[in-house]
Structures are given as structure tokens and as C-alpha cells.
Image 1 (tube, rainbow, N blue to C red):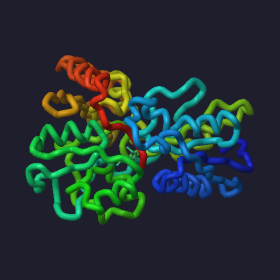
Image 2 (image 1 turned 90 degrees about the vertical axis):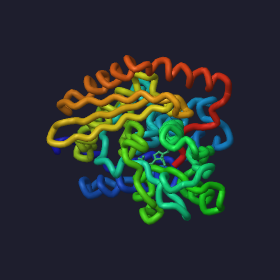
Image 3 (image 1 turned 120 degrees about the vertical axis):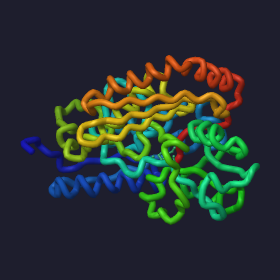
Image 4 (image 1 turned 60 degrees about the vertical axis):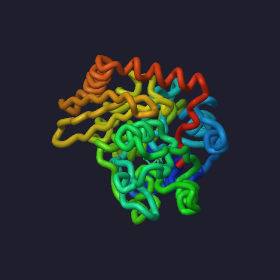
Length: 327
Ligand SMILES: NCc1[nH]cc(CCC(=O)O)c1CC(=O)O
């Protein structure tokens, strides 16, 4: 790299075990690439981590988990921030960009239970824990005899609540469990038919701020970017953006890329799963955003706007006890 390299780079991260694992992963990869550069991690608590008792949709949504990290970059206390891409808002504030998207971990949702092997095994009335509207809608659509109850907190907290017996099973992203060395907690993986993943699930992203010192940080981070993953998540996030993308709406978007070809699937639903619209397209992966827009358009012709209007009305009524990230 012809690029000048600073003597030190600071990575901002949330302090949950998963966030720190991800920041450490990026630190290790950068250290291998640039052994002459010292790379440090700045752990931070975000407002989203503090507010555990209220629906995040009421107090600002996904942005709450990234704002403090952005302020640290703006003030020069950090150079980059590592995020679970799923938790990153579709529109970043002026002056911030995603510099790299790392190769995706398993994007699927995982069924976690101490007593049962799969959703299909659960008896009528069994309590399933998830605070994702998407998971709630998809599970209710297919297994209407199950009872969905909210579940928040970081991964360890959620597993603790399962082990205490509060739930028959809980649904978590497989990626988080694998990264934390807990793959044995996964009893089965949900197929895309049972539970289509959320936009960006399983992918890590590196965010940077516009530099006043002219340092081309994007070029420095470029070797960490995984093109097929970047293309897949660009399509998924486009779908989400078209529908006003936030975790307050049951929306799934999942793309796979192989040999430059993309298969993109998406779904919107009412939170109770009684109305579900699905769409899919195949095309060249370089046209990621066009494919995303095409799937969004297909959903729209299937009444997606009406479905989302139901969600908005319920939220205005304060019926949504759910929300957002905290792994
Ligand atoms: N919603 C919080 C969140 N954000 C990222 C992950 C897991 C890791 C990932 O998807 O990359 C999780 C936990 C979960 O959904 O179970």
C-alpha cells in the first residue's frame, strides 16, 4: 500500500461481549496487515445499552447503538467503529460512511432451548422469547399455536433468562452464538422459509468519519472488505431503506451471492403474522441496489404498504413492546 499509515489507530466499540469480540477480530486482522501500527480498542456504553426497560422504538431506534461511537470519531478519540451491520441505521449521518463489510458469518436465526430440538416440536402454548418483530411475525405465521414473549438484553442475559425457565425456547442470531464460542447452544437452525434473516444479519461493518487530516482510511481498511458480502448487504439494506428501514417493522431481506450471481429474498408482515408479503429476484450481484429496489417494488404490489400501515397504527397505540439490538 502506497498509503501513509498512522502510528496508531483506535477502534470504538460497544462493550457487550459480542461487540468486543468483533472489535478484537478487526484489531487482530489489522495488526496482521499493519504490524507497524498500534491498534487499540476504546470500549463505550451507548444509550441503547442503558435503556433496557422501554421499547427502543419510542426513544430513537437503532441509531442509539451507534451514536456515541460516531461522536468519539468526530472528536478524534477513535478512528473507526466496528458494528454488527444489522444494528446500523440505513442512513448514516452526514460525514460518516461504511468503509468495509467483513465476510459474513452464518446469517441464519438459531433455535435455542434446553428441552426441545426445533420450533416444530414445541407444544401449543409454549413460550418463545424474541424481541424481533421480524422473528415474531414469521414464527406466528407458521406456528400460530406458539406464544411469543419479549426478550431483551445482551446474549448472555438472554441465555440466562432461558436457563431460568422463563421461556421454552428463544431465537437468536446464529452468528452471535458462534462468535462467542457458544455453538453448542444452537439446537437447530431456522430455514429461510421459517425465518428469513434480517438485512445485514451475520455481517460486521466498519464505519469511519470524514477525515480532516486527509488520511485515506478507506484504502487502509479495504483489504478487510469482502465483495460478495458487501454486495449482498447492499441489496438487503436497499430493501430496508425503501420501507423506511428500522427494526420497528417486521421486515426481512436476505441475499446470497455465488459466482457473481445474486439471489435476493424479502418479506414484510404484520407483527401477528396474519399478513405476509414475500418476493424474490435473481440477477447480477453488481446490480445489488437495483435488485433491492426491484424486490421492494414486488412487495409493494403485494400490498406491503397496507401491511406496514397496520404496523404503524399498532405502534402509535403503544402496542409494540419490542425492539432492537442489544447483543
Ligand atoms: N439484535 C441484536 C443483534 N445484533 C447482531 C446480533 C448477532 C450478530 C449478527 O447478526 O451479526 C444480534 C443478536 C441477535 O439478533 O440474536
